[in-house]
Image 1 (cartoon, rainbow, N blue to C red):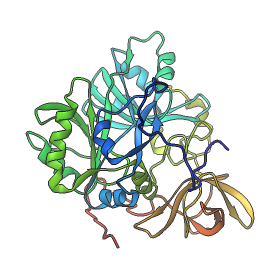
Image 2 (cartoon, rainbow, N blue to C red):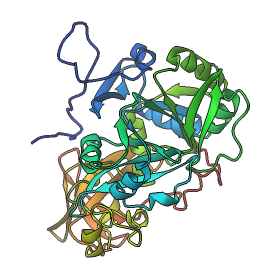
Image 3 (cartoon, one colour):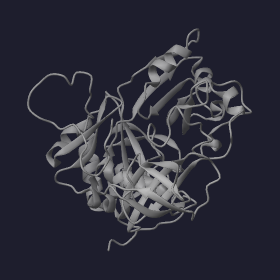
Length: 394
């Protein structure tokens, strides 16, 4: 068994005295901000990303995100693509028509293998006509891009940028207070801007991994990271802003139906398998995986699940004693008051409300049902700022 996720044990990275054998890992610029809280890290893109803290509970972090504002210093890995052929390469690597992405905007980018299986996903930022950043999920996209850029006039580099998320109902109030000249207007969903934060010009985007109102900021090597964090911490304090861990965000992203690379989808699933069809532009020019996707089934196999216990990642889902799928993500929702999860079914055509038996972290099979994703806020009105909803903690 290569992974546990059984609710009993797991292997995370902690900071201890000594030296050696962490040479290939990198710390976030705000590592020292997290240290006093007793962080435990996962390794993501060879970067450390805090999953949980000794002095901050996961449930408290969840409610911090839902009711006020929470900050996660992520392990996302931005790569830079610059040069006359940058757009040409991006359009070859991604399933969306990148020629339609204007400077000052960002979009969701999926890259596939030749057989249509998903390589990686992430946020693609277009800074100028010939300059892109791709904040990728975990995976070796750099080597893939280099291999397919042969003969093109484009420079692919690691600009040593780190991404942080500010998410929650007070997040835009914090941004407005943090910007020296006030929050940019307009600053709609998936917008990208350069703003002055405490005198430093910083790239920000209206994106996140929670489906809550939120934004992200990109810390570059030339920034005074200590001064930048001090500025954000001071302006965020009146709005209840604090750091939180990936475990708390994990609950919210399942509720929201946000998928995790390498777990909910991977090289064995096409974009259509997991409901990503809207991110595939088959009518554009050639891109990697296009031929395979043209012949692939359009029917999704991914679905939500609910039950009275915490679904065990990797556990089977059964209908009438027959295995019909597996759990790819699971948690207990403090808001919904029951177990929630994401599942990849063996076949398409699954209907919300179908009764199932599902393996859970207590080692037992529990009654549950299939459910449409997201599990609530179906139209995504919270993240777009159309509707403010701050749930009461009971």
